[in-house]
Length: 342
Picture 1 (cartoon, rainbow, N blue to C red):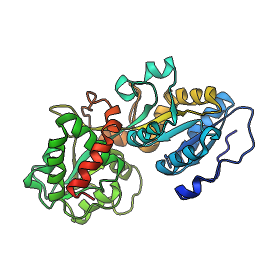
Picture 2 (tube, helix red, strand yellow):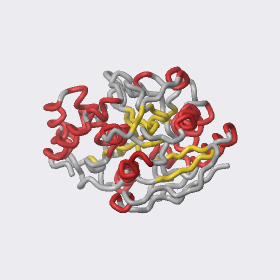
Picture 3 (cartoon, rainbow, N blue to C red):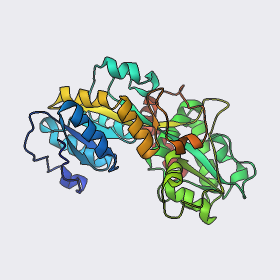
Picture 4 (cartoon, one colour):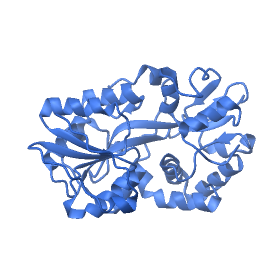
């Protein structure tokens, strides 16, 4: 049986004063998740069916969850933390909220570049950040992230704010590939090429192409795939004129970010937490991530969704360790701030 705890709808300050108040189960695991997909209920139901372990879940933004875990301290009921980006997991690591896991299952199924070097977290699904463009207005779309800063694209680009964790991780990868000075030049170039002030979510960047507000947009792949699968206001039925580029296919490959899982340092149900984490690497869970949200599985051999497959094959960046997304996070934000990329 699965029990979902009341969603967290508190400010960070208020969250610091509140802890989970729920009756204990003989077998349970408490998950704090920044994933906000109702379809994940199926995932947890399957885990409970297979193990008899109830899943108690709180969903909120990662920063709120991290603040809550920190405030709860040694009495925190949280066992597993799920974030939609490595950068957020880095914040939990920096606060000392995580503990290392030991699992032959995770080690054997998750590629090395998707695991923290000290086994503090691992990726459970992949999200690629790619370049979209208007086919009728862009004859020569940028083929690399670096090319987005070229003068040829002045006034053409839509992208989210620098505070967005997806952009921070992309910047962190640029720093790793080229160094801080070159990364600063790139940030300045993007700022100069904006069609509008950074705003909205990834779907809004794609809508900007449809509306003609911009000719080029940067977005995670699954926002586009979602519009191919089901109705997305302002996007579905209007995608025929949107093309895409898998960036950097001639060098390091396309930037890949991760949904990540970790065990909390004070996990009261550590054994059950590890069972859930291992379950997330299994075929059922990996196929779930692919079919329900068009994410790419983290485990080799698991097929992507038809919509993701329709976007074609690409070379992912497997040479840049995903751990550097968190290691370079502070440098990335500093560069963004100095560039005036709000």
